[in-house]
Structures are given as structure tokens and as C-alpha cells.
Amino acid sequence: MENIRFGLLCAVAVICFFLYQAWQNDYAPTEADATSASNQTSAQQDYAAGDDDVPSLDSAPTAENDGGPEQGARQASAEQRGADNAPVVSQGDQVHVVTDKLDVIIDTRGGDLRKVELRGVPVSSEKPDTNLRLINDSAPNFFIAQSGLVAAGAKAPDHRSRYRAERKEYKLADGQDTIEVPLTWTNDAGHEVTKVYTFHRDSYRIGLRHDVVNNAGDDWKLSQYVRFWRAPYEITGDVPFAQAFFGIGWYDRKDGGDSYRYETENHDDLAENPLELTQQGGWVAMIQHYFIGAAIPPQDAKVRFFGQPKDVPNAAGGFATGFIGAQQSIAAGTQTTLETTLFIGPKLQDQLDAVAPGLGLTVDYGWLTVLAKPIFWVLEHLHALVGNWGVAIILLTFLIKLCFYKLSETQYRAMARMRKFAPRMQQLKEQYGDDRQKLQAKMMELYKKEGFNPLAGCWPMLVQMPVFISLYWVLRESVELRHAPFMLWIQDLSAPDPYYILPVIFGLTMFLQQKLTANVTMDPMQQRIMQIMPVGLAVFFAFFPAGLVLYWCTNNMLSIGQQWYIYRKLDAEGLGHKAANS
Image 1 (cartoon, rainbow, N blue to C red):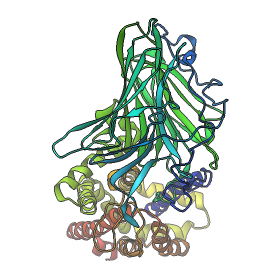
Image 2: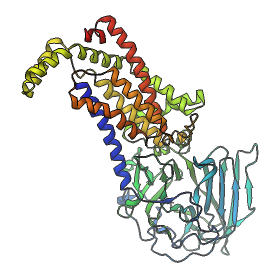
Image 3: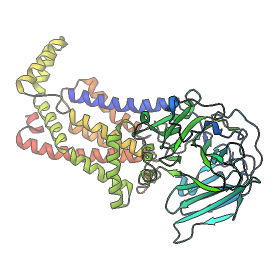
Image 4: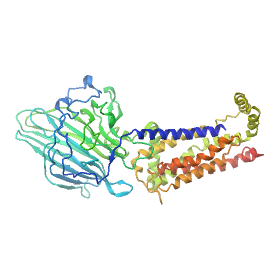
């Protein structure tokens, strides 16, 4: 009876966990469709009002500035808040860049990234041939990457300035590993800036540098800045019962020391808790489900990160994040280069940490990361072996079941002993049923006398629950499994089974398990609950990712086989069904 109660408690705990996720979803922001073409405005229109604010040079850290009392402070200045909301002028010419991974539009006005399509990454399972557009200058899914320089005295090219492009088309040729796209700006004072984007084969990393030449008669103080600016939108294909994080993240240097930690802030909370952080190294990123846009300054550079609300026309809740680098003085007649790195693409775990330390932490598996990361590592290696994520999940289930074999055997032996003592327990219930306190005392006396622990069969089940929840997080957060097909009708393991076949199989296998582990000491109410539970959980699992239900179905079938095998051994030892019924 205690086994059944404990099993019910575990089931209730799982349901409560996912109901909590659903509660979070209810209070999450409502966002516009990321892929709705019907609501998009023309890319040739002005992409926003309120784009006239440029980070102030006064807000940039100096080379000597160690952050002082503001180190780690989270507070936005008026300039960063976008107080000046004058209308912008029209766009400039466009430069089209195509690599094996990216399809990019760069605007000569400001050198902004106005469109970044992820080639080969479908927008949804219903549109497998349509590339997902992560950067987009059209409403409602407005999201652009801006960058530039700010200077004291003479004007520097910011995200409103006009650049000259050598060409309008660039394509990464076969056998070519990188391609550079230069944009040039000059003024009458003798200043020249070449803004260069560098694209890499088989990578979502984009190099960004400003080559600065000072032919003027005076020194020129400059700072480089990068800013992501976007409107919120609804993330298509999200996992039910959980709202993926949507906001900004950054790599925070702890107390000015040598260690860092990953921090996040939901975009809804930026109005009350904006980010301003001065430190050396780290990075800042726009984060959404499966994808990020990250700005990564040189690790030895002093920078100030910022994040705050910034209105986007026709899309409430706009926000921006980025950094402004330390001031640099370029002497007359000299030149220098200011560099940074962008990463705009899916959160592929084999690429992120190679781009910047800690960037892999944006794949957030929650409080069970310590289990989820090894599970993904094994799953990824199994996928490399068999080439199918669904088969990899089945093999992973075999491995997990093998690891827990001895624990499961302990559980089934405890269940068998429970059956052996069932008649005596039933006799105690009939004798002391009206005195629950005395009944419990007599049952504890029986357990002590026979050397039997009724909870012995519960611990294996308890140990396996974190594995189940960890796999849920892996399926929820790993872009590698996004739209991954299995076979037949399962063409997206990260989405629910479209025909509910796997949930039905789960319910049937759970019913068979109950028949194998039926407890004769259950009262009629408990029996009714046990009969209903497979149906209820099957309906509940109909909303889960198919990959998770596939794991649980496989686990149930392996458990049935394991129970049958172990019970045969126990029968031979006089502890199984035959002994209990004799």
C-alpha cells in the first residue's frame, strides 16, 4: 500500500511540476508571431521611430576606469533609455551576403544588420522549406543589430551614418572559409573609418571591426558600441506547459574577480530593473527559445553593458541591450582597429563555448543542469552513431534502465515481499481498522519483526524522477532536437504526437504494469484511483513532446519485461506471485 501511495505522490509531483510551468506560461508576455508574413511592413520603410538616440561617449568607461562604485550597478542613464525619440530618415542601399549558414542584408545607413536568415533552419515543421529569419527589420517581429562609434568633438560614424559599399552582392565561394564585407565612411576633417563584417564557413559567428584612420591634426577619442534592438514576439513551436525564457542574458564578472556567472533578466522586468554593468570581458545577448543574438567584446576590454526598454512602433514592449567599449585616443596621423564578435543563430552546444567562454550557459536546463548536460552528451553521441534522434532516445532509455537495473530489482523484490505479507496486513486492517493509530503501530511492529522496509521499493522510483525531468529539459531546450524526425507519423520529436498514438501506448503499458504490480491490500478507493491514473496520465502526456513520451513508453515496456524476468526469479526463490498466492 505504501508503494502505491508513494507512486501516486510521485505522479502528483510530476503533474504539479508541469502545472507550475503552465502557471508561468499564463503570466508570460503575449508576443506577436515570429513568422507572420501577412503583418509585415515593407523593408523599405523606415524601420522605427525613436532611433535617434546614440550612446553617449560620457557613458563609456575610460581605459583607467575600473568601474569604481558603479561596478555591478544596474541602472540606466537617460541617453540609454532613449529619451530623444526623433523620427529617423529613410534607409540606405542594401548589401546582400550569402554564406552556407546565413543569408544577410546589411544597410549602408549605419551598417546595420537588417535581415539574417538561418539557412537550413526551418521556421516551423509545417514550413520545412522556409528559412527562419532571426534578424528582421519588419513589424511585428522587429529585431535588428546596430553598431557604430561615438566620439568627443568631431562626429564619428554611428548607426545613423551613411557608408559606401564596394559591392552589393557577396557570396561565400566553394573552398573559401571567410568572406569580408567592408563599408567605408569619411569626413572633411580627415577621419576615415572602414566597418568590416567577417563571415565564416559553417558558423554563425560574425566578426565586426572598425578600422580607424586619423588624418586630422588633433587626437580623436572614440568608443565602439553594439546594440540589439527588438520587439517581443510569440515563439512558434514552444513546448507545452512551459514558457521559454525571453529577455537578455550576460556573463557577469563576480565582484570584479576572475570568475564569472551567467545572469538573465526577463524583458518585462527591464523597466524596473534595467542593466548597467561596467566590467572587463564577458558578453551580453538577446535570448529567446533555441536562438540568441550575442555581442562579445574582446575579453581584455573594459566595457559597459546596458539593457533597458526601448519602444518599437506598433509593437509594445520593445527593448534593447548591448555594450559600449572603453574610450580610446587615436593620435593624429595614426590608425587603430576596434573589434568585437557577434553570434546570431541557434544555440548549438558544440559551437557556443568555442565562440566565447560561458556562452554555452544560454542553453539553460534549469535546476537539473547537472543531470541534463550528461544526458544530452550521451544522447548526442548516440545520435552520431545511429543518425536518428528517436532511435538515440530509445538507446538512451536502454542505458538508463541498465544503470538502474539493481535498484529496480530491489523495488520488485520489495513489492514481492509486500505480497507475501499481504494476508497478515489485511488481517491487521480487519482487526484494528477502527483505530488507525493502533493499526499503524501494529504494522510497524510487523515490519520490524520481519526486517522489512516498506519504503525499499520507493527509492528506485524516486531516483528515476530527476532523470525523467532532466530529459524533459533536454527536449525543451536543445535546438539540436528542434523539428527532429523519428519515423512514420513522428516527424518532430520536440512537438506533441499529432495522432496521440504514443500517449495511448503509454497508457496501455502503464495499465499492464499495474496488473503486474497489483497490490491486494489496496482499499476500493485506491483501486479506483489506480484504474483511472493510466487514462489521466495518457491524456496529460498527449501535450508533451513526442520524444519525452517515446522515452517513457520505452521505459514502461522495458520495465514490463524486467518485472516478468525478476518475478520468475523470485518465484524460484519462493518470493514471487506463486508464493504470495499460496
